Amino acid sequence: MILSETKPFAEILTSLENDDKVFLLGCKGCAEASKTGGLQQVKEMKEKLEAEGKEVTGSTAVDFLCQKALVRSRLTPLKEKVLAADSVLVMSCGIGVQASAASISRVCRPACNTIPLGDSRGEWPSRERCRECGDCVLDFTGGICPLTKCSKSLLNGACGGASDGRCEVTPEKPCGWELIYYRLKGLGQLDRLKVYIQPKNFAKMEIPENVIPSTLYDIEFTEDGRAK
Ligand code: SF4
Ligand code: SF4
Image (cartoon, rainbow, N blue to C red; front, side, top):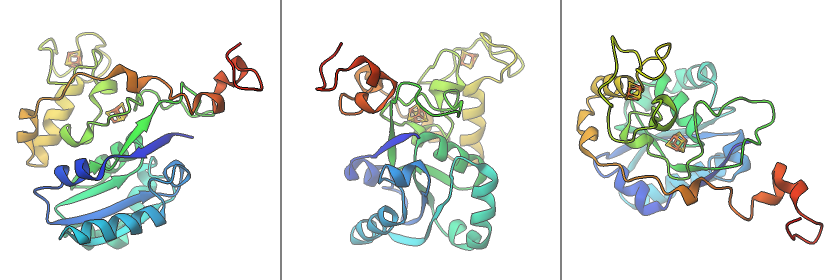
């Protein structure tokens, strides 16, 4: 399970300010359980965007948006509606946004922030793709997470140490910022690099108090909720 919360609607509208036509993409997995990306939330988002004058070219929710093969197969019948949109608003955790951005030749914008759960994700080793930072910045990076793809988690561009496209810290990996650059270039979105990404608020990377009792940390609490 990965928890997400919907970004403030004003922030979503700002990210869509240059997009008249939008395709809505939800997730029937963790996002539906989080009440951020199921069919009901997709329907509500459609109504809110249309009230703001946006044209919604189509919408759907995929069973598990983190699976690229599923994203591709479920969107194939909707290809025309996806391509008719200026961007795809993805209503899921950061992993779903990244899987969508890797699968769709359209700009994918995150509608949600992923909330830290303290590595409590069942058997799924997904930390390498989303660090659950609580304030998703994939809108500025072509759907590639700079916190996880860059070995230094740099937020505003490359360190300059890459060699032949390989990271200077972890040479077996491609430089995350080169990946971001070429993704943005392919999308005609290089101007996104001019947006300064604010330093992370690390408080948002702590497990929220109301979530702690439902994670592994549950064993640290007494039955009446006091810390042991
Ligand atoms: S920016 Fe990266 S770490 Fe933060 S929520 Fe988005 S995908 Fe996850
Ligand atoms: S080489 Fe690229 S991925 Fe490695 S630390 Fe520098 S910017 Fe980040």
